[in-house]
Length: 295
Image (cartoon, rainbow, N blue to C red; front, side, top):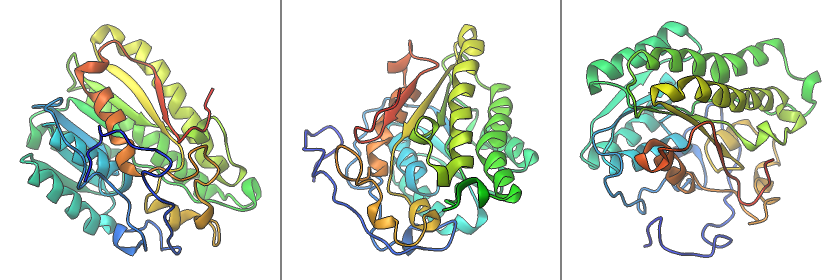
């Protein structure tokens, strides 16, 4: 078994996963082929020792991989998630606790401003503060007819989850963040290469990129950094839960590496942005997309 630093051929490091479609929001246990979150491979080195982190959507997928990596690097973690994702959240919390760190679970809907405030208040109360905020939670639902199939209700859900909640959480967390703090937003290759069937989602992700760049300029003098990780096709429960029938097996095959990425392959990017190693990096985007280009 190798860790995240062992040289490997990226084209064969992971295979092409398969899964039948599953009900939204999707649980890891429902997937025919489970993602790799770094459970067996991520090795920490104390780069986040003593940090207090909030991770939205931390129950599964990218969020779980980040929670595992952060805890093994020495951080305590608050995990925000939907109540119907309790099964996944408990598993993630177990990994955090196995690393010897504190895990705090806060179920609820981040489309509600008061709940976003409660997430931050709970982190301050239970963890002792907020050093790192990872705005990872997102909603997408592919619509084959693009704009003609995207309802106002879906558009509202996408924007409230992906943009409003990010704004509310960031504003609340900034009341407690000190110099050296880090805000990490999750955008997407969709912010640069929008797919018509994900038009609403892609629009929200482009907004996150601009939000990151603008906020970084405002907070630079406070010593708080703001950056974004832009994933390409990553194998998470969201994929079989939101893609049309017959499309899941093609997911990620159009990348130069010929496969989708695994959540574990994104975790080091988040650790970099959360750690002192990125002290002179703010307002930036790091694409993790298997070779797909982002301008």
